Length: 294
Image 1: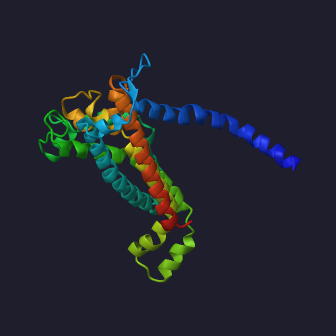
Image 2: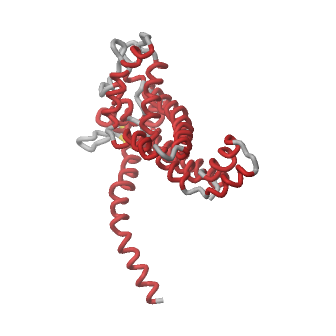
Image 3: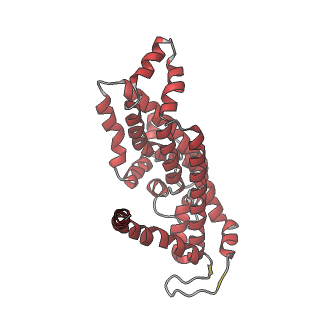
């Protein structure tokens, strides 16, 4: 019994630094953000407020700028996440079958992961310029993709392409590591039975990669809900009340913009975002228990 007590004390001693960091940089900010969200007319600099109320949440849900940011964030999540996973899985399976050039292609696909997202976004902005842009020149067209007066659809297309392309390297790396750990006997047995490549992919590859798919899905959904650097990279830092930039403001962008002007709105938006991410993560974990094969 004494040995068990000593081991527990040692365990808590080892956990203490991590718990302290979690308390200071995770739990305290969450609690403090919720407190600010219920302080009406909160003054960020002076710390004063008018009264305590949940009215900021009601006003926020009826605020056009926030509703637009929720719409843009939802579109990003439900378009980019599924497409990214599907494309990354197909590329990983293809790379896994090309043994001679696998390392070269792995390096090429991994390069965006170690490159600054803002810098890549600026490159995309140049590529999709209306006048002299690479895309318009390449396809012989004259489409206003992201400049002033561009439509929401064209801007969303450029933003989605950038987010998908930027998220592929990490996914491909995870899927490749999973594919290389699958026992080759499964594929050999399937070939002996005369199974087609499509059936092998659907019945062997996907089920055995389900833990990686679940992990990628959870992290991708969380990342997509917190997306902001892509908008800054493609459309610039001007997120004023007028113009194309406001159309593509995400929830995180809304929080940044209103953090000083209306901290109660920003805090309430952060709490709503936290609850949404928590809900989707819980759903993903629940689905994973039923669908994931370990």
